[in-house]
Image (cartoon, rainbow, N blue to C red; front, side, top):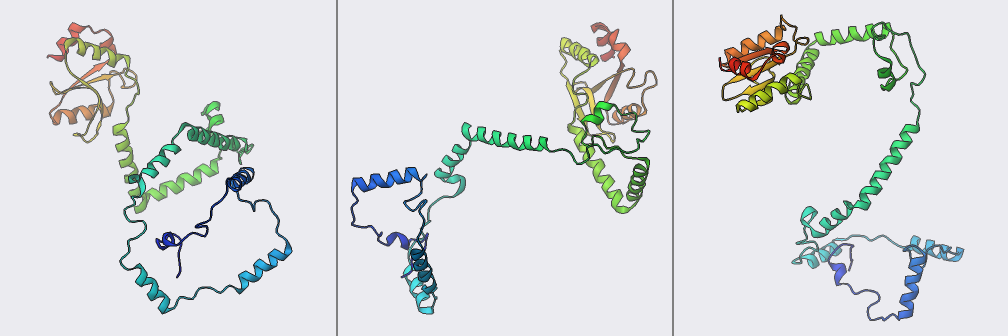
Amino acid sequence: MVFQKGNKLSKDRAPWNKGKKMSIESIAKRIETMKKNNGWGWMYGRKLSNETKTKMSISHKNRKPHEWTKESRMKLSNTLKGKEAWNKGILCGPHNEKWKENQKKRLDEKYRIMRVFKLLDKSIKKKRLTSWNKGLTKEIHPSIMSISKHKLGNSWNKGKIHNEVWLNNNSKAIKEFYKTEQGKRAKEKISKIIKESRKKQIFPLKDTSIEIKIQNFLKQLGIEFFTHQYIKEIEHGYQCDILIPSMNLIVECDGNYWHKYPIRRDIDNVRTKELIEKGFRVLRLWESEINDMDLNKFREVIFK
């Protein structure tokens, strides 16, 4: 009869030390040897003689591999018929309690601290290595001369500046690529990705002083409003400064410098037309107007 590792039949087999009783002294000796040898058995650190090595080699050579015949296979199949699998009913993964306990141990403070130290060692080793392009310089292009020195010093290409030939060759290749069908498709995909990212992006990160002033006026008047709401209904979608849903009103606080006082940018005029066509009311206020504005003036402007 053949007993395989992990099979249920190995459990039914009697152990080699069945019926034998070990003395307390022998158990204590084994524990001491295990402690000395860091968990290994009595063979740890011992050297075998040449006689024992020859005996072991001869025994391994004379050993024949097991040949599976039809009779032996039939016997094994008959013995396994009607018997349940050894791992039946045992849950795997997150359903198993032992797996959960091991997972908790991994997330202990000790494990986290050890992981942090390992990452720090890797980062220190990387910093010690010198960059491959250190000291390499080329002829400076006039367009790059405007870049400040501190940006070049902190960039990945420290000390490496491309010359005129490199820039001209790459610019021509990029233009030719965008003329092809693949380039057009790539350009469309890139534009879609940029538009989707701009929907979630809030720019500027902080509200300007003009916007904060008008928000305070709306709070005093008790009008509900939302800030930096993306408007999808128009072709040139963007994030408006203030949206008042009860009045269906969009308030834009335009800075004199950025929005070109008193002409106003072309995109702003296009967006106002598109918003009015979709049924929105638009109120655009200049920076100079907001600075000279009181609560009473603001109330008159909104309720007109």
